[in-house]
Amino acid sequence: MGGKLIVFEGVEGCGKTSQMLLCGEWLQSLGVSVVATREPGGTELGLHLRRLLLEKVENKPFGPAQGKPVAEVTELLLYAADRSQHVEQELKPNLAAGKYILCDRYTDSTIAYQGYGRGLNMSLINQLNNIATGGLESDLTIWLDVDVEIGLTRKRGSEPTLDRIEQETIAFHRRVQQGYTELAASYPERIVRVDGSLSKEAVQQAIQEILRGHLKGLP
Image 1: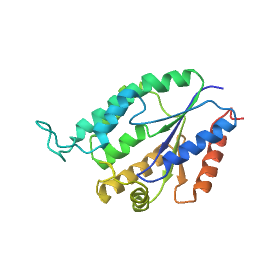
Image 2: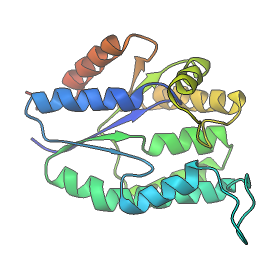
Image 3: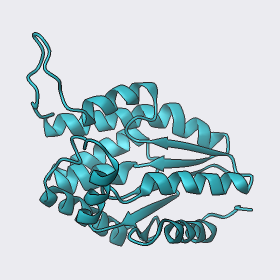
Image 4: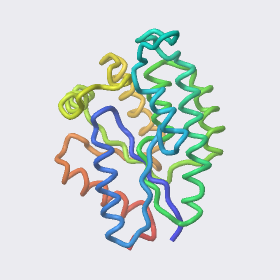
């Protein structure tokens, strides 16, 4: 059985991380070798980049002032650097070893957040994604579709503090959601929508049915 790259995508609070972990447990129960990872932060270098991208800047002597934003293109380049390291260090070797990789975010996140959300040049984003991935695409992307206000309410109820992206305006998150909607319409053979507003059990059942239908070789 060959390796597969299965990506979980969606707006903040859509439930993708918990659903990915549940999916990993299910696949392991079938005897499938599974690796769970994420972007940003799937490598040692990526952990440092994740902090730079998501955490607030603290006041330090002779350091940057608190609250200074990361420039939008800088943000894009940091995500690309994280992805390049992740692909070379984790994704390619594990796929070559025949493992199923479950990845929390991948290239579609950059298109949705930096492209639609930030309004950055889409051709630049596509070029950077191609450089970072070497052309490696997901075998299947699960898009957990949930209203952005519901997702953010979930986040506020489960997290003591929101990260830098989660604190963006509701308009920003709606643009991100529009990005996912248009991506799913453009790549129906790769991206499959799941109603993220359903119960956790119902969402997981839907994901399992999708995987059985799309990925050959599952026991």
